[in-house]
Length: 68
Image (cartoon, rainbow, N blue to C red; front, top):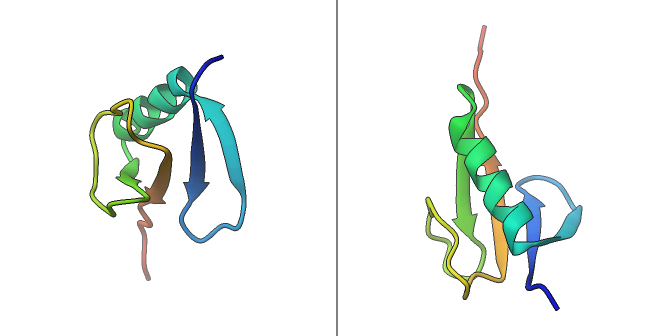
């Protein structure tokens, strides 16, 4: 059975379970997006740039730009 990773977007109550490969794609998409954001390991609170097999849950921290 494929390892599952929980994915949560900061400020949202929704938590999705995805495969490790899908979580890696989310991480890559977040960092490749010009507006992008950050990914943190929910357990340690540390910002991560790659997924290790021991990561159980990630938090997507989206950047807010603009102002006015």
